[in-house]
Every structure is written in C-alpha cells, then in structure tokens.
Amino acid sequence: MVFQEIVTVGADNTGREISWVVASTGTEVILVDKTDGLVEKGMRILSEEMDKKIEKRGLTEAEKRVTFSRVRGSIDMNHAAEVGIVIEATPEDLELERNLVAKEETLAMKRRVHLW
View 1 (cartoon, rainbow, N blue to C red):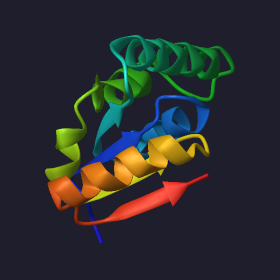
View 2 (cartoon, rainbow, N blue to C red):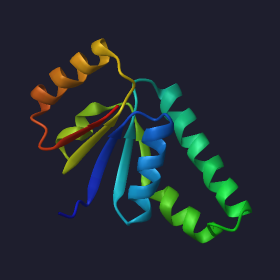
View 3 (cartoon, rainbow, N blue to C red):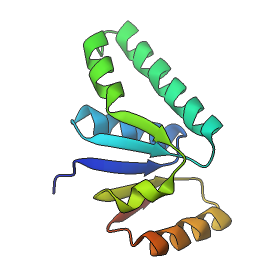
View 4 (spheres, one colour):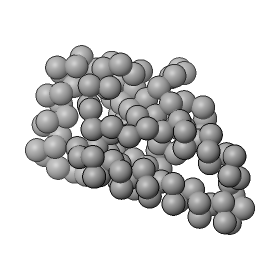
C-alpha cells in the first residue's frame, strides 16, 4: 500500500526517525506533537541529525534539503483525518493514550499504528 502523506504523532526520538525514513521514500510527513515548542524542537533536532549524517558522508546537502522539505511540523491532530496512516510514537502514558483514542474516534481515522 502506498501513502501520499502520513502523520507521525510524537516529535521525540522515535517520531523523528520514523519521519526521516518515511520522508526519504518520497512520502510527505506531518510531525505532530502537543505544543509548538515540542514540534519546533523536534524539527530542529531532525535538521541537526541530518547535518551530522552529512558530516559523516552518509547524506548529501541535496538529499537533506529534499527529505527535510517533506516533513512539516504541526500541533493540529485534525491532520490525522486527512492522511492514509497515523503512526503514534508517543511515550507510554495512559492519559495521552486516552486523549489520542478519543481524538481518533472523533476524526474517524482510517489506519493507526502505535509504537511504544
């Protein structure tokens, strides 16, 4: 199955890595977290991690530009209703999980993968 766009919930380590890998395949990614600060931090660290890969010659500047341009940050979970799949890369937190499940039911999300 091919997806044009996905949502990754959680801008921490796992969410960033998933977003990077998916974006490198040509798929658009919306990296969602609960605050602008967390999203901005996740995007900044993703860019820095790509820069480290460039230094080690595992990635070119052009590849970084193209891949990074496919990832955009957001605090709006409503994007989840618009995409083919939602990947949750969130900490094991019962309250957070309840909120995500309630949001999923409201948005009638199609597909969800949860990673703990």
